[in-house]
Length: 91
Image 1 (cartoon, rainbow, N blue to C red):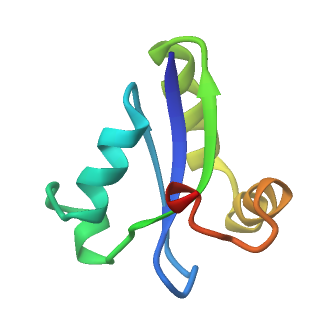
Image 2 (cartoon, helix red, strand yellow; image 1 turned 120 degrees about the horizontal axis):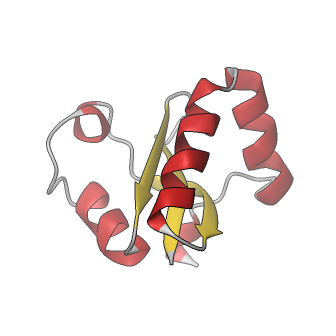
Image 3 (cartoon, rainbow, N blue to C red; image 1 turned 120 degrees about the vertical axis):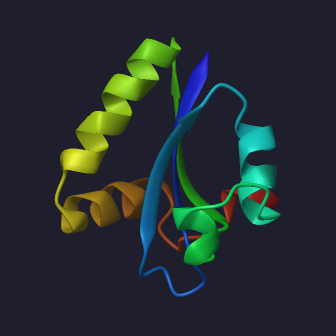
């Protein structure tokens, strides 16, 4: 099992798409700045979208597909699953 996820900041204006086989651990790492890079630099901590995949290969394929999408398509995808853009990691 693997996951594709989207993080954003408190203003919902920067998006990050990632993939992992352990969503809980990965979100913890992002929220506690255990990983340097894009998410730490832009303070992306809010999990607003998550999709479960059968395998890591499928998750990577989906991640690449989503990264190629236009920004408005990504925002529509998030809104369809999470209309108020709540932090799903705190649920």
